[in-house]
Image (cartoon, rainbow, N blue to C red):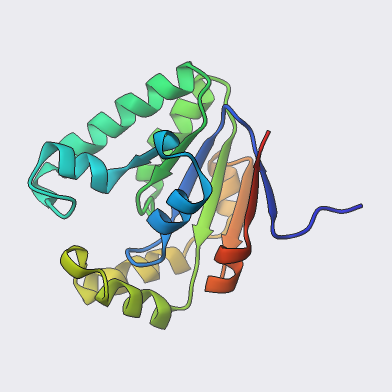
Length: 175
């Protein structure tokens, strides 16, 4: 029997990289699907090191800390979910290299929702609203990503979710 397209098997020592623009639902998906201690959120690192989740002045320090913790978790064989936009190849390269260094599989979960959904969700984020022109740039970057390109970067599995229904119906099994 072939697996249902809603099913995703994630290795218990692997890396899951959530890829998508602000407002696409990455954090909501992470919290609904994975254990809290497995999630490394760029927003949470900004909040810890700066004046809140939206404090862009600490972005470099936040990602340095996230990358250190990712490497520690990969070395220990712990499932890790990175909750950041991860829309540039450079951003993904560091994550994939950590997984490869420790012989762990990297999975890309791409939240490729319709632009109108993303823009509306972003507008309703309260204090974390990203300016719409920035979200539109992120949407354009997402549009340039192909599943084959992500596989060539080193992801063993690429799952693209194209609607809120697909996101909500995703069933993850930790193996």
